[in-house]
Image (cartoon, rainbow, N blue to C red):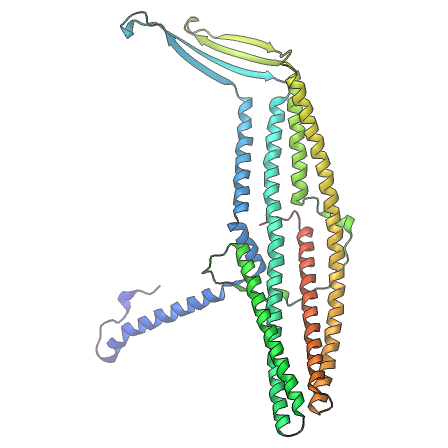
Length: 432
């Protein structure tokens, strides 16, 4: 901390004149340093994008509100275990003077001791619904994370393709200038230069297309994150510099490892809630044992206690229909759980297969790209010696760029499949 009273603001000569300007210069340098640090901190990694989306996505907030609502309902189900207290007072207006009226009062408490297990099953049902809402919110986060991962990598891919188009244009322009010098010197024919001019126009068009595609994918990513228009946004490209090899996975082992996936948890909690609702409906077949205690003005302070039994003998078949409906809903939830488990296993099989194929394609595309690079160097040497014309050079250059594009596309496809598998493998380790 700098204390302003200790600074030599007043003084003789140049020392007193420079002191305020020295303080101002220090403040400006400090501001520039903090500004540069702020600008450097604007680089967004994939994890930054995911956490920002989780904090600002309306569906996530809506799911959190539903989760809170279910938690409040579960907490409110405790009230069913408490007694019910009622009180009242009444009088007859026997005279015009209110002070001569005789008031009657009563207070009464009711407590259900047994009602066929309805209270405990309703309590368990609300608990299952609460946990189901938690798992549903986790499932929303998981889906949003996969979408952001796909769009993030797609944006990086289009950025790489745009940079490749820039390099292609720069290389062709340099070769065109070099060919111009050779044509002027009489070493190469003018036809080679005209063919390179056409190639320059072609790569300029490809560069424009690549730039527009990159801008479109970047806009889609910003919209997916719900970023404000004035928010600086620069992606971190260091996360794709290392391409790890793919290790074969077993679908059965991965299925056993991912039993805590939110989609499975949602289905299991739904089965538990429907089961307890079914059991609670069956509780209506049993009698209700209750305890009443109260006092009134006639008892003169004494407390009356009564133990009663209430049994509904007939209600037009409403109880039977309610039980049957709850049973069907429980069976339906069990079938849904089986379907979710089968779909989950098939998804894991598909992810492992696609990741294996993507890695093999990436290796093949890398070898093809290396071969095209070697072949292109030989073409450039022959073209400079006049052994090949501009058409051969343009064809070799186009094949080289196409091989590079295919390698980049297979690389990011493999990175996406590997990232999704990592999400599944880390199931149960938290979603924050």
